[in-house]
Image (cartoon, rainbow, N blue to C red; front, side, top):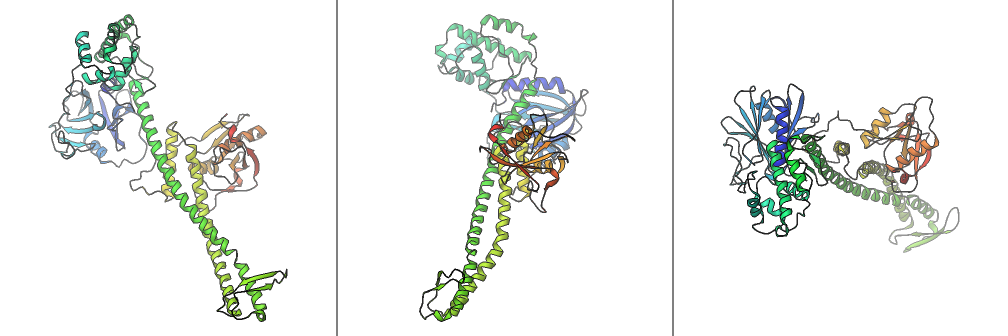
Length: 588
């Protein structure tokens, strides 16, 4: 993940100052343990600014409105108590070439600042710290004890100290090319490494884009550059400094992440022309704020998605393995109880032929009552015939009782397995992160497992009930809409709230999968191609998605029922018809 560097921070603060000064702070909300959102109102409108101290995604930028779930963090509560209703009067760097921003709050614009909210955007050392006029720390995102850092501890009630000063050289437009070149090439090494090590304000992303824009290889040695190449690179260096000085930024996405600088063409003359016309560089269609919000939201969501999916998959696998083992044990006991009638018939046969028994017999062969075929009965030589018969009767009763006790237990376990396999299918469809709805689908699955007592999360926070996610939506060849549930919550909503009397409900036959609903208007009839399309998509969103053909049932929604006490997504149906789905045709 690309970190926010000095150039990006300068660009975003330039935009924030233009759009949000002055502004009144109306609300504070902490999204997670690394991000707090501040709601500001100006004469032009209202919006949210995110302050994040995430170890790899620390940033300050305009963000999306937070979810409508309770905020239980103490840091945001302290900020809310001290800053609500005050005016944001300044967004200023605390020192040149440092990634520390001072957000100043006063009663009204033009008055002295009462509070300073320092956003330190410094990778794993990032922090957000609130101080009063006396420069004492009132609260911070995370405190740093003297044991954790002897260089710069951060504790409430202690004076706020700036991060240690950088020692590298300060970039300057007045520096000559010879001085700049000699500093970079003094110790021969990789071009990108030498640029990074010798000057403040540089970053890996900046240096790589700068070098590549000059048509050079970042890995090549400084000794291998000819005078023309040094000239090309120096022009890029000056262009960067001019962009910083004039606050002229043009953000865009790159294959590696993003950039806030639109580098000039490789030709030196074109570079000079670009530098001269720097003040008239057209603005990008996207602002720095939009680029940063989109990039970091996507990257963090993708990281959270992978972690959450792995957690849920591991939990499901473990629970299902235990349930399947338990089910196999119950099945074995039922298999043993299937011999109960055999023991009874042997006991009856032995009681009817007591005269054939002799002391010390270990087995006896007697003709069957119906077939007259010989039946060999094992005997205990220490017991007489009646006692052996009584032992067989006891075995019969014991196995019969076991069957009565085990059958409902097996049914309950099998019901759990069916339910969790349904959840497993919903997870298997979510192989990779594509959009925020994928992450929300996972969050709903997690919430469902917590509610069903399969997950124990002490600090659990419910998801936003108002943030409804869309069903999977498709269009059949005849133009009808096909809706498919993403998880069990959506399956229930689709079947029992969305469906009407004219629709058709689809599900794979005795195979875990999503519910599907073919929306039909009064008087319309689905063609065979529409039914086949719906069956193909239903089969694709099932456990049998890799099969060639899958039996899919469909019926009217009024014939679909939810048994009393059934888990989410579990239903029974009747008056169904079958069509064979082809899941391999669904992606096409």
